[in-house]
Length: 426
Ligand SMILES: NC(=O)C1=CN([C@@H]2O[C@H](COP(=O)(O)OP(=O)(O)OC[C@H]3O[C@@H](n4cnc5c(N)ncnc54)[C@H](OP(=O)(O)O)[C@@H]3O)[C@@H](O)[C@H]2O)C=CC1
Ligand SMILES: N[C@@H](CC=O)C(=O)O
Ligand code: NA
Image (cartoon, rainbow, N blue to C red; front, side, top):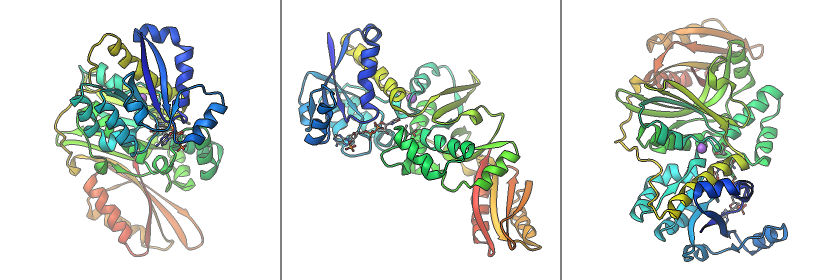
């Protein structure tokens, strides 16, 4: 038999699918128990269709989603257009027409996943999305299947390929921010709007999805504190290096007695930490659990073939169920009530970079602020910016999130001081 699939969009990831289906034909047929054919491809308009045909792409291109939704021979719809609309409407229509759906769209899953999964369940079809988190790393299926016996307590992840690639190029090779971003876009790593990549939004979407698979809880996207890489300066990087740290954009999800918490923030990682060596477009998800202990899953987080490989793995799994006329199980079955951690249960050390006039008594004023919050300094450094202005860099001892927010606020409002940056220290 043959399972017919339809692709929505034919950009970076989607155009990698034919290669894998062709190169691994025999293996795929044996795993899926069926042949898999690309029956239709939705493109934006006639101009794109003609251009793809002229390039030698020999597919049945359509420009109206209804040509796919109303086609009973199409059993799996593969959404690779990205963004919220019209992807949300098209996926809903496909599920309602009792077609399985595969997507890599983390924006949509993080913001509207629950609604879409309900439509899938109501229509006895499945929605799979391995590629949505850490592109080529098989992390979601691993958490859903191989961690069933275990209790996860913490997930740390470098999960945005674009920002990690940019930071690596800027720090190790001296590229400018704009050069690094342009190259990440050229290589197909960045989103069509790279704001999400550099501002920590894409990684925060992935934290929402990871919270569901690792902890069975759905953290609201708005509750994921997130910050990107724009504010990190060469001075921050230099000090980090001097102290034996590297700076990375790290996502973290923890479960404390009071509940769960997730954030994505620039982080000082000790050079000896496993995540410190994750460079370029590589991603890694570091999992702490009571059974397995510490485990790290490492691989390419973006790029055409790695991402398409995850998409095709989902297609194969669904095709297998279709070929056996079996109901495809839900991608993730771990669901608990979502309970948020109290801020006082979230303890971390922080780096504060503060600019101020280079005159006596300034450090004392900062010391008084920290003392009033009952937080002590672990290390303090001062660096001249010019004749009159200096940066005071403080690495604190542990404080809870209330103390951190209060201190950041107070320093920002302290006359004569500018809080230039804060970075979490692991
Ligand atoms: N690239 C990567 O490494 C990874 C991507 N992803 C996710 O995979 C998805 C696809 O990403 P990627 O392939 O990089 O994106 P691209 O922008 O390369 O491809 C998307 C394609 O869909 C087309 N498209 C958009 N809207 C429509 C529409 N209404 N009708 C028809 N075609 C449409 C776009 O056309 P046009 O150019 O005209 O807008 C474009 O050709 C996204 O959700 C992304 O977040 C996930 C992991 C890794
Ligand atoms: N733009 C994303 C693509 C994969 O999710 C990234 O850079 O990680
Ligand atoms: Na993945």
